[in-house]
Image (tube, rainbow, N blue to C red; front, top):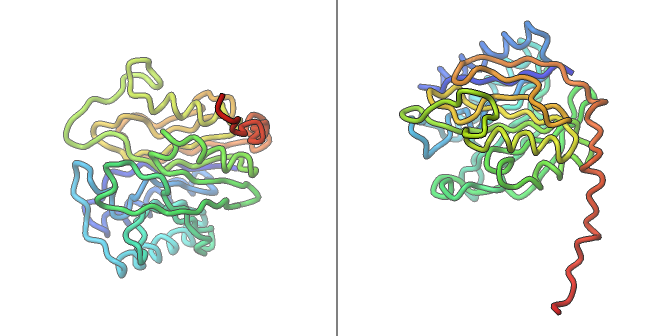
Length: 267
């Protein structure tokens, strides 16, 4: 399978965001991508950050979803679209999965929120897998992949070859970009990407915004835990790479033995 990891600049408006989505899908499709993943809550943008988020209500959510589905059909590529999702309980962070015909297959919600997100969002409570062109995959969103590794293992033990990780790390107004991928003095995020892959023996695809001061690069990690490729820090674009599902054996994930974690009586 050929995957695309799309890193757009934050959207100044919903129409601006949709234009960037369509353009990056066109670029990815021209390079043979079969599925393209966008960052966390890209439409309309993740709340609580140091940039403005454009207005977004239920009607705009539906308009955005239909527009992305049309772009998927036009370019013949499946999409994992980071968006907000409105529910009776409140606003959620979600990743919608749309196939190359423009059919919405469902969504994965963010179920483990960062404490800073509590004022803006409510968590989801279910996990699911998806299949595109015979490749099974899961989605975990930002904080989940950094601090809740069980969200990745959940997918790996159920046969996922790759877990996509829409995220946002860094900011627009202050900070410093890492000088080297995975450097010891850089934030821990890229090391965590390596571990999510290595500890499960699957691919891990982490997708960041093209921020002015990113804390991590949009990166594809091989099942060995090595970085296969990444986009230059802060550069808007799409990373297109081939993966080999046969290499994603899930070996270490399938050796997980929960029956060995029975709690013994206190001594």
